[in-house]
Image (cartoon, rainbow, N blue to C red; front, side, top):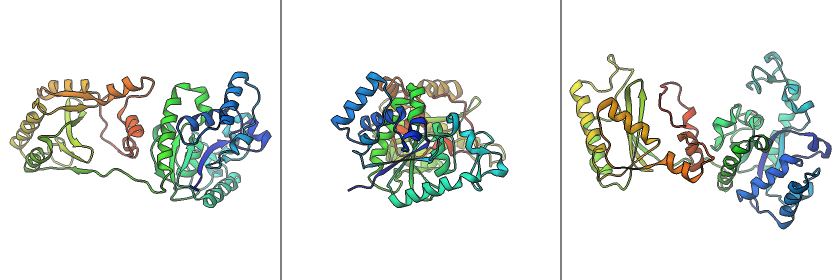
Length: 367
């Protein structure tokens, strides 16, 4: 039998506290629906009748019997207690009273040391189950297991636990109670749980293989263009900008190969990557020959921005623009976000790369 998936939430609500269990109130009903729609569990006729009955009558619910049909998931919370008013400030205090090594859970508010046994209990549960994946439902679970907050920025991506217990694969997403308040995020959670179902088959984090040429010479660009770009079916193109300048441009003829061509380099005395104006001019000639080649179909993310910027900044007219991931995604799922970081979290197994960089802001708007 496969290992159970751990669903880790925040704290008990009123219904959970009364029944002494997790996700047995209204958010539990919604979680059950989300798990079924994502195929992370298979809903039984009893499940469906219960869900339909609850949403038809809004009567108080007790999901304990329903959850008993699904040993493939293990439900827990960071705090197995009911904070008064569902306010997590109840467990928080100033930094001097906080658990060592953990960041603030709320703004400038740290979980007090007296609640550290809650983390010890959570660690023992995880170690006893040894899951392939833990789904962090909301900020509290992300805080407890990754030492981070900001679930909206990290949701949908896999990372390893580093706090409370180390080395377990995590996938954060929104808490079902948050979905009941912000229904527009529901399709995103379904997509995240679909990814979690795939990731639950193995314990390690698997990233796609990439061969990326960086800091190329002119000879490298000639060779890459000849060997990889010419004759490709579809060429992905992306630019990074600063002010009115293009700082670099990337070309990817496949999902496994790419080249990044820089123009700015803060390590050099004049700020240019290229040693001479003649070398930079030759580089732009090569870029122009690629973008102006109509036989090479091109793919952009928010191409209206990139194509217009290339023309305004360096006078390059793009020929052969064929696809745009932002527009395609919006046509497929209008309620979803359109930014590249969001699309990467949904459609790829990459990490949250948009939040790994420390500097070099761009004025590009793609979300």
